[in-house]
Image 1 (tube, one colour):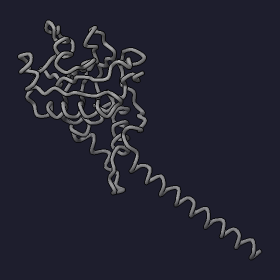
Image 2: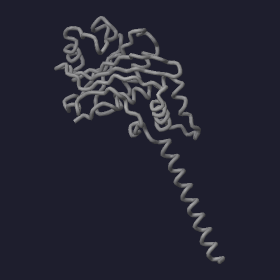
Image 3: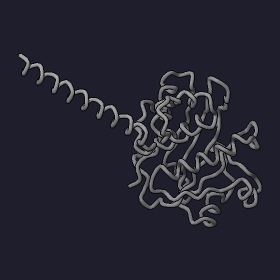
Image 4: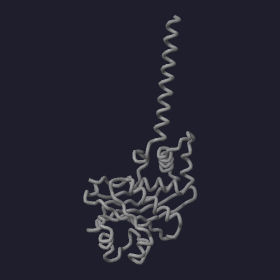
Length: 227
């Protein structure tokens, strides 16, 4: 009987040690999963485009974010940076951002709405000036920086030679939607490298900049693969 108890205690100790190791490994994984391999639980709606981006499309010009209400808003400037960064991280495309100042020097205006009629020779001039194959245009259609935060994004990738649209998205990321809020919090929890075990993922629903990071990431994860 005593021998049996000793075996049982040994088994329990081994099981406890294995569980602790598993939990430790799980915590380490949570801290180190980069956003590139994060699988979201929320899929943005209203996405259209080709099954794949042609292999010939290598260099992409990215215009500043269009915002009709107030293009000088500092948050819009932050969106320029976030969206440029996320597109560059999203795949094998070479991203060439154009500043508002450069756009105005070239064409006389500092932003372009994706649904507006483009000026004559606009695509040709971009292709000649930057040696690019496509252009990405982004519009901020909804900007609600207070809780519950919401960002509306309309974005498309256009072939500079033919004017053909490879990919487009037009959707609103509303944190009042439980699915969006959960996806944002999950993204915040997995896409950081904080050494602290505290759950701070709720902060993404209080910070316009952090929420915009999630939105930009989500938008460009809907891009078709490049063949």
